[in-house]
Structure formats: structure tokens, C-alpha cells
Image (cartoon, rainbow, N blue to C red):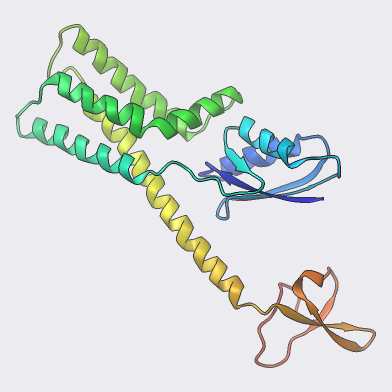
Amino acid sequence: MNFTLEVKGMHCASCVGRVERALSKVPGVELAVVSLLGEKASVQARPEVTPQQLVTAVEKAGFQASSDRSVEPPTLLPRWLSGLILGAVVMGSMMAGLHLNPWLEMAAASLVQFWGGAPLYTNAWKAARSRSTTMDTLVVLGSSLAYGYSLVKLLQGSHHGATYFESSIFIISFVLLGRWLEEGARNRARRSLQGLLETAGQKARRLKDGQEEEIGLEQVRLNDQLRVRPGEKVPVDGLMV
């Protein structure tokens, strides 16, 4: 049987490998191929395998998956934009010598760290549960150390120059900005790919026993010989004879 899953949360080839390994470990799965651009996993498995088993395997690996509907990730635009604005205010005040109240800096950093960075914490926690690490793990560790150190110094009575709240803000904000740009580029590439696929013909001419027959693309099989007439679109990938 063939299954198609939508997988969200992948950002690199390492993520693709983790999803493929997680799916391959499900008893009965014969082949698992994951597309980073398409955010899909194509699985060939024996009849006893269920879609829920595959979804569970992907989620245990630290990603979101669905077999029947689109999985929408958290909206990143307001998260990174608020972090960028707050970080610019804090950094700008420091460069101008107009230090903000350290408790206000802490409040701004808390908002970015725990609201803006919530998707990163979620992904890092899922990866930790599956005994693995991702880039989100590193981001969460770095920003949390900067925030935690600054909070301790603030509670100890230290003030300006001893805290690094602006660092935790910018770490989260720039990573979210990168994710937002990445998602936009991926959506544009997906739309271009979809448009390219839509330009392809929906029919093919198959040669069989010297006769030509018109069939749907879903009926084309490996080793079929197709005829493409002048001016027609090539319906499928293949070897030119």
C-alpha cells in the first residue's frame, strides 16, 4: 500500500533523514521517501500498516504529521516582528547611552523568549523526547542561557552592563526571521512546481503491440513506450528512444 503524509517542522537534510529513519522503523514499511520542499513523505508498506502508525512514528521523531489534512505551523510573522522591534529598542537605548529600566528589559526578553520562541521550545522538547537534537535545541540552549544568566544577575542586584537580555531577544528573533523567510521561499518554490506540473498533459499515447492507445497518466507503467508528437508536451519523465 502507498501512503502520503504531510510533515511539518523540517528545515534541513538532517531532518529529512530523521523522518525517513523513523518511518523505516515501523514494522511493515518497505520504503520511505521524504521531500523537504514538498513537506511530504511517501511510504510503501504492507497492508497491515495503518496511517496512524506512520503519523505516530513521525511525531515521536519530533515533527508534526498528518495523513488527511494540512498541518499548519504557528504563524511566525508577529513573533519575529515583535522580537525584532523590542530588540531594536533595547539595543538602541544601550548604544545611545539611555539605559532602560532592567526590569523592563527582562519583561521584553520574557515575551520574546517564551511567546516568540514557543515553537522553538516545542520542537526542541519533541526532539529531546525522541533522544535526538536539532538546530532548535541549540537555539533554545543559547537563548535560555543568555536569559537565565541575565535574570540571575538582575535578581542579585546587578544592573546595566551585567545582563544580556538583548542577546536572548536577538537570538530568537533572527532565527524566527530566517524561518519565516524560509517558509516564504518554500511556498514560492512549491507554487512554481505546481504550476509546472499543471502545464503537463494529462494524457499519454502508449504504443502496445504496434498499436497506439491514449491513456491517463495514472495508467503509465515502468517500461511503457510512449509517443510524443511534434508540438506536444512530454507527459512523464523518461528515456528518449
